[in-house]
Amino acid sequence: MAKSHLTPFDFYAQILEAFGVTAPFQRAQARRQFVILMRDLYQHQNKQPVIIIDEAQSLPKAPAE
Image 1 (cartoon, rainbow, N blue to C red):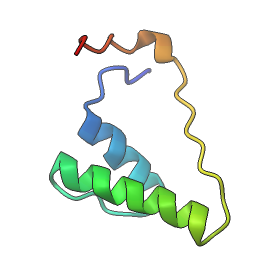
Image 2: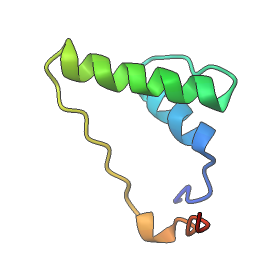
Image 3: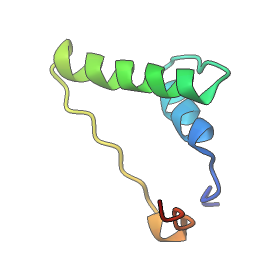
């Protein structure tokens, strides 16, 4: 089942948990932890992080800013 209705917090939390990191309770902190994780993978572990979103056509359109 596709999870096309994830909130931004859920998105960050699921990625963090996939890497064994417990997600903080607030979205801003989860995003910050996500950025730290991606930066660490790239800068210190010499890995290029890539996130593939399957079924992205099912995601709701973002509101225009």
